[in-house]
Length: 136
Image 1 (cartoon, rainbow, N blue to C red):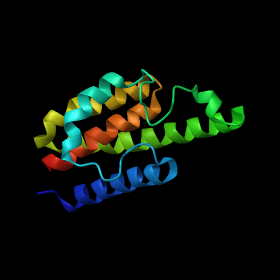
Image 2: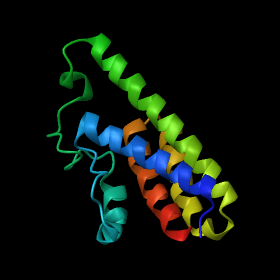
Image 3: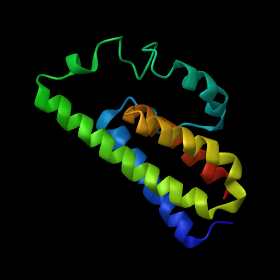
Image 4: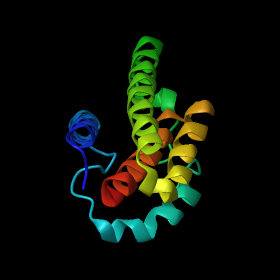
């Protein structure tokens, strides 16, 4: 059973993912069920290949925006969201002793963040969040 603090934190994280879903609509955070877990390894392998990523048809990130300012703004927005979400997940998994099997998912999110792959880091954080949510 989760403590009220953990439940509050999990709810806040869900709100963050819901906000991203509302803003970007292609991340796929809403309505994902347990069946999706079987595809997480495939998703991890596809990450960064440009094959079927978030509905983007192989276009360059810079081509998606009208100018460099927009590109930088969106990039910073995603980076800051990723940092905030990952920090919360790290804190949760450190306190949740029964969730040791979720630590590799958190590590993956951190590695992707360090590699400046912020959108992929958010997707990895989503996987970690679902793992933590299940074990609490």
